[in-house]
Length: 220
Length: 417
Image (tube, rainbow over all chains, first blue to last red; front, side, top):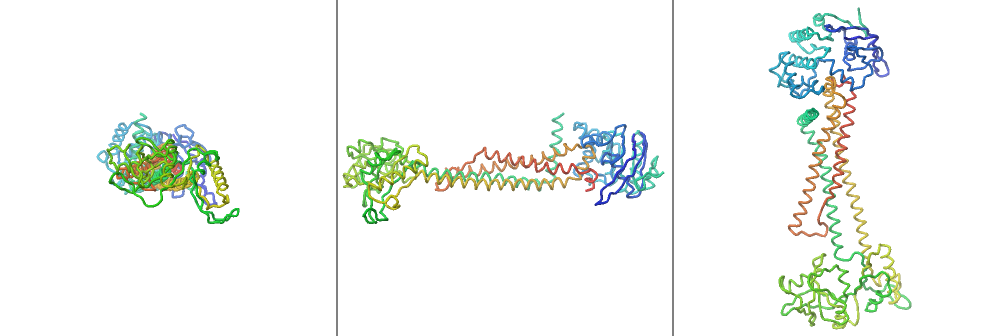
C-alpha cells in the first residue's frame, strides 16, 4: 500500500538548513492499522504530510498503491488526495459555515457527484459514526468528539484506501478518545489501511503496529 | 451534470456572500460609487455642453459681426477720436470686394424712445431694420408668411415680419396677424410674416423692417449701424483671412489704421465657437480624469477587499485542498464571487446614475426650467458600458491575483493559519 524509499526532507530556516527526514524506509501493507510515534520535532507530522501528498519530499521515492508520487502538479495531487486518502486532523478542520452533512459531502463535491446523491451518501456515513440526528447542525453546536466523528465520516465518504489521522485524539478527553479509536478500529476491520500519528502511548497501544520516529529516522 | 455543478458553485458563492454581508456591501459600495459618479459627471458635462451649443443655435455659427467704433490713433493726418460711420456703400463694398461673404445684412436701429402700436394698443418692442439675408444670420424660422425680401428693399415697402410673441401680445394666439398693420413711430407697416427663433425668447419680441424703408422714412440717409455676414462652410483659417480682409478694406475706405483695434469691432462667431469647443475639450478631459479616478478608486476598493476575503479564507482553502479541491475550482469560486459582486454593484450604480440624470432632465422639462448652464443632460451609454466592463475585469483580476497566491500556499500551512 505504502512504500517509502530513502525519503529525505529538509526545511530552510533562515540561513540554516534543517534536516527533518533523513532517509525513511517504510512499507505498509493494505489493511494495516499503524501508529507513528515520536516526540515533537521527530518529523512524524512531516512524514504524514508527505504520505498524504500535502507536502513534497526532496529525495527518495514514494509509491502509494503502486503509483509513483513524485513531482505531481497541484491538479494531479488534488486528484490523488481526493480519490485515495481520507484525512483526519487534530483540530478537526470542519468548515464552520457548513452543517455536518454538508461537511461530510464536501469531498464528493470535488468528485462531481450530483448534489442529491452526495447528500444521501453523506447521511449514510453520518449514520455510521452515530450522528445522523446531528446532520443539520453546525460544527460549533457539537462537542469535540462529535466534530471528530463528523471529520472521520468525511474522511471515509470517498471510500479511500488509506486513512491518515494526525493526532486525532489530541484535542479530546480520554473517554471520547477511546470512542474515536473504536471507530478507527471498525474502519480498519473493513480493510481500510489506517495510519495514526500520535505521541500518546495508550493510543498507539490500540494499533497493530507501532513505528517510532526519532530525529528524522525510524527507530527499530 | 454540468449545470448541476454550476448550481453548486453558485450556492457556495451565495453562501459566502451571506456570511460576509458587511464586506460584500462595502465592496459593492465602492464599485457602485465609481460607476455612479462617472455617469453623473458625464451627464452633467453633457448638460453643460448642450446648453452652450444651444446658445449658439440662435445665430449662424460661421458669421462675422462688424460694429462701429472710434479711432484710437491718428492716421494720415486725421486725428484720433473720430467716429466711424457705416452706410450703404460699406454694404456694397463687403458684397463686391470681399471674397467668401455668403449671406450679408446690415442693421439700422431707430433712435430715441418709441412705442409700437396696433389700433389702440401700444407696446414696447425692439425694432430691427435689416436686409433679407438677416434671416440666416439669426436663424429666424418663419411659421407664417415670409421674411423681408429683395423687392421690399428695392421698393421701400412698408412691411414687417414680427416675432411670435409680438403677434401673441398684439393679436392673440388664435387670430391671424398677416395683413394687419403695426405702427412704428407714426408709420404703418403691413405684417407679412410671423417667425420663431430657437434662441432666447427675447429674439421673438422683435419687429423686422426693410432697412431701406427705415433709412428713408426715419431720415437715416443710408446709414448702417452694424454689418454682419455668414461665410458659407469656411474653416477657422479661412474665416480669419476674411476677417483680416474686411478690416483692411474698411480701414482703407474709412481712412483709419488697419492696426487700430477700436475704430471698428469685428467679432468672429466661428472663432468664439471654436474657443468654446476647446473649453469643452478641456472640461471633457477633466471629467474623464475625475471619472477614471473614481473608477480606479473603486477597483482599488475591490482589490483590497478581495485581498482580505482570500486571507480570511486561507484556512478554508487549505481544508478544501486536503479534501481534493483542484486549484482551478478554488480560483474560479473566488473570481466568480468578485465578478458577481462587481457586476451587480456596477449595474445598480449605472442604473441609479442614469435614473438620476433622466429624472433631473424630466423635472427640468416638465417645470420649464431653463438655465444658461444646463440643458438636456444625457449619458453616452456606450461609454458607461465600457467603464462597467473595465470594472468587472478589474474585479476579476483583483480576485484572481490573491486567489492564485492563496492556492499556492501548502494546505498544511493554510490549515494551521
